Image 1 (cartoon, rainbow, N blue to C red):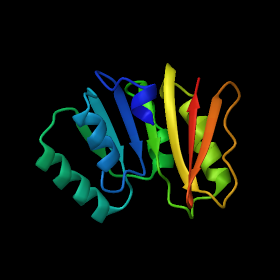
Image 2: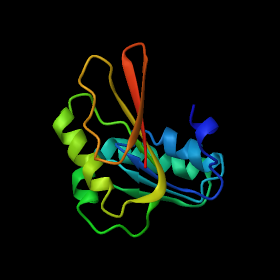
Image 3: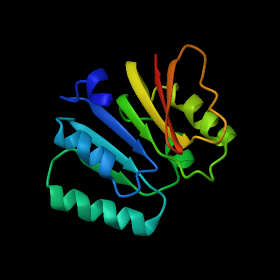
Image 4: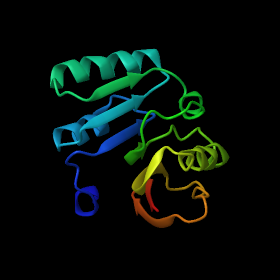
Amino acid sequence: MLEARLDFEGIAVLDLFAGSGALGLEALSRGAQHVTFVESNAAASRVISANIATVGLPGAVLRQCPVSTFLSMSPDRAYDLVLADPPYSVSAEEVSALLSRLTDHWVTDEALVVLERDASGPEAVWPDGWELISRKYGGTRLELGSL
């Protein structure tokens, strides 16, 4: 789905709630220039570090901290693609706040944000100006937002 919408070559990717880092590593393998992985869980961060070392591609940066803390900082770059797979226990209000923070210099004018959520929960409230496509796949909903 993403490949049809985005050329990965040379882009900057932000992988929020990165888990194992699989999504961000896939972006690197498809030509992304830079991926920032943000994960608060120490065990998951160790897995991401090991996976980055195993893959051996340049451009990976890991930040072990809560996503809300990371997004409260000043960005060092604007991202072309944001992958967000928050735990289903993260409320819709928290997800909507995260999406609002992204508009504060975290994304480029042509950015795409991919949000994965539980299909049975409410859709996130996206900031004004975002175009949204939402698709359900079994128990999962993918929301794709673009400026």
